[in-house]
Each structure stands twice: as C-alpha cells, then as structure tokens.
Length: 391
Image (cartoon, rainbow, N blue to C red; front, side):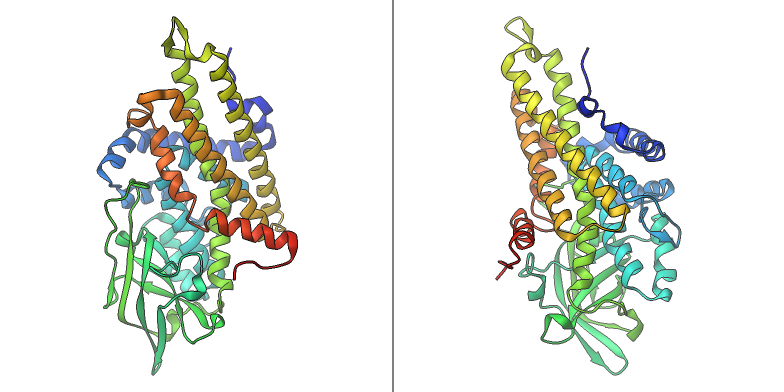
C-alpha cells in the first residue's frame, strides 16, 4: 500500500481541524473551477482572472488573513495552506490571490487611512475590485530604493510620473498601490492609491511569457497622473512600507511552492506505478524509489519549516530573515523536485497532459520574484554576521 508524501511524517496532525477544513474547501473549489482548464489557460497564455477573483472572494480567500472590512481574519497557517493549494493548481492562480490580498489589500490595511480602508477593502475582499502593487521598475527590481517614479506636489494635489514593470493583475486592475519618490532620499518614498481609470494611467499587458502564462502581467505607466492629497497612504514613509508588504507576500510563498512540488510528486507517483518498463512498473526500480524518497524527504522538511513559520507568524514574533529562510528553501526545493519529477516522466513530462513542466516553468519566476534567492541569502547572511552585504 502506498503512502501520501505528507503522511510519511503525519503532518496533518500539526494542523488544526478548522484549518484542515478550510484547506479541503479550497481544494474542492479548485478541482471544480480551475484544474479542468489549466492546461488550456497556460497554452493560450490567458486567465479569466476577474471571474476567478469573484469565486475566490465568495470563498473568503482575498485578504483572508486580514481583520475587518469584510476580510475573514483567519490564522496565518490557514492562509499558508490556502496558498499551497492554490499553487498546487498553478503558481499564477496563487499569484492572483497573493497580489490581491498580501500586497494591494495589505498595503491599504496596514498603511492606509480609515477612509481608504473603507473605500477599497470591502470590495477587494469580494473580488469586485481588483488591485495590483506597483513597486518593481524596469531598472529597479532587487533595489527598490533606486526607483525613478516621482511624485511631486502641485498645489494640494500630487502628480505622478514613472513606469512600473512586471506587475501581476495590472491590466485588469481597478486600483494600483504605487510607490514613488517624493524627494532624493529613500526616506522620501511614499505609497499612493491610484484608481487605474485616472487620466494618465495605462496598464499594457506583457505577453509572450514562457512562465506564469496562466497569469495576467503588465506594466503601470504613469504620465502626469494627478491625484488628490488624500490618495497618499498616510502611515507609510520610506522603504519600510513596501518592504513590509513584500514580507507579507513572501510568507505565502513559504507555503505556495510546496503545493507545486506536492502536485508534481503526486503526479509522478501515479505515473511510475502505471508505467511499465522492462516488464515491471517503473516504481519498482531502486533508482526510481531513491528519487522518490529524496523528494518526499525534502518536501516534508520544507513543510515542517513552513508550519513552524506559520506558528511564529500567528504568535506575532516572526522576523524578516525567518521569512527569507522559508521562501529561499521552499522555492529551491520545489524547483528541484519539479525537475526531478520531469525525468521520471520522460518525454511525457514535457507535455501539458501532465502538470510537471508547467510547474517547473512557473517556479523559475517564483525563484526570482518577491526577492531573488540571492537577496534572501543576503538577508540571512546579514542576520548571521550583523553585516549588510547588499552594497
């Protein structure tokens, strides 16, 4: 009798019944609404993101770990498990939810005024309003302090000019949280809530991607965009604002890629049990079992780390370097598992009949967004040595 990878260490025993029930609900919705269409969406490079946002809003997934304003207020672990299930379907699906809840909604929830929260968060929680998060620029990715987007005062208004790049959800977004420089110092970086129908805002889509194809990605171009004074997020000044949002989103990535890895391993276990080679199942060969054992070990170790970090976050004691360790480990191991699973599927592993190479291609993006592996290594290195090596 075969054993599920997570059952090897009885990992479900570490999760509350409520969180397990939530996970089952997410999985059921994905089985019904998402999985039957993923190969086509990926092949076409399309995603019915607005329709899915409504589905996820009805399920309470959008901003689920936030309190009030129509948000579910779940545990961090519950949110992590939801991210795992979403990414077990596709990284692009998890990105839709993560950018909405942990970047755009979190920025307004944590740094916005009460008026901004009341105006935007309830409708974002239902999926009626789609948000995006404008930080990355063509020449400012890992170094957000080098951003060139500017916000200048003109009477009582702010006028924004600049370009944001690689922005998930931007082509369909109703509102963008945009970070801009109001002076020469990194302390002068401020956040703005920008309705995308404001004159001067455009959100062209980025196409011809080889990764995250079932995801809507674009730019946010700002040309003389005039905003009222109350468009600024009043509580955020300097890089602490956007970096806190990134840390929030990275927590979801501690769990998310493990869903991709689990889906790859489950697919592979089924495949090698059926595939006949030299008159016996492929799963009966020593080399196959060695690969499967190593992958299950790394997946379960990564899940143990994720659950531990979930407890720390629920306790309010989690530190940025701990999130970096989780993100670094989860993506690294998930990508290695996806690639190894591809070898066991042989030529079948490169087709969309199986999800393995789709996951591997997606994880190439997850490896570098929300902080590259090198950035997270330096965060951990700074925590170990007390010396910043970023410059």
